[in-house]
Image (tube, rainbow, N blue to C red):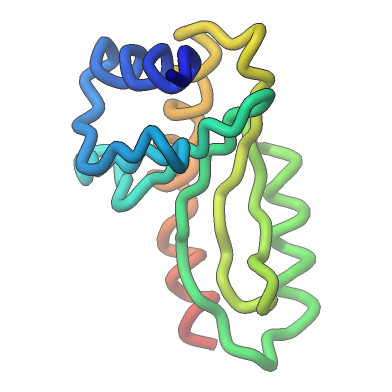
Length: 132
């Protein structure tokens, strides 16, 4: 039994984030809350850490270094989490990690609020990057 998995699932229920998939064996929870911009938001409960990831957009293979620079500059403004690239270097993902042992509902809510704010402020720019 994964105690942390149940805690994270409980936090999401308390915060009213609809869980669309729970796989306790793999430590995966997926949430969809399109009013916040979340579609297939992944929670990886992997003791000792919680990984939160949201795929944002795919960028062209030959993207300019200026776009990557803009993403890194924007990372400085993000309160919780950051932009990252997947192993192909083409998918922009929001990612944040927490130590499970010290995590409380307020910290998790802060990450979700940060992502929601980021999406409301920066989604047009991300879409623009995907079309370059």
